[in-house]
Length: 79
Image 1 (tube, rainbow, N blue to C red):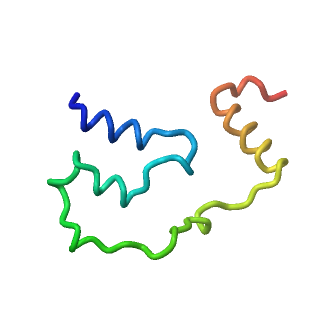
Image 2: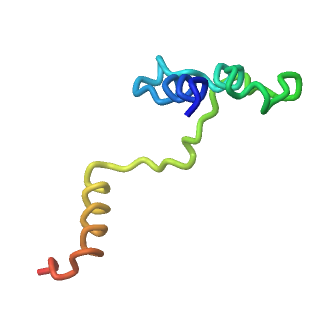
């Protein structure tokens, strides 16, 4: 693997999101320079949120979902 690819991956695969490279920074990385045209890339003015796709679950809802999922793999657990 090239040193440029390793550098980009190391910057992208950081556990703490506040220390992780941004999309804009990644696109400007020398490893990706030949894959984009800076003047032809729109930038979202604010972080995009997919909250509408994430339903709010109570602790009991989550327990029930886990229980149902476990039963799919262990149906003999039903008493």
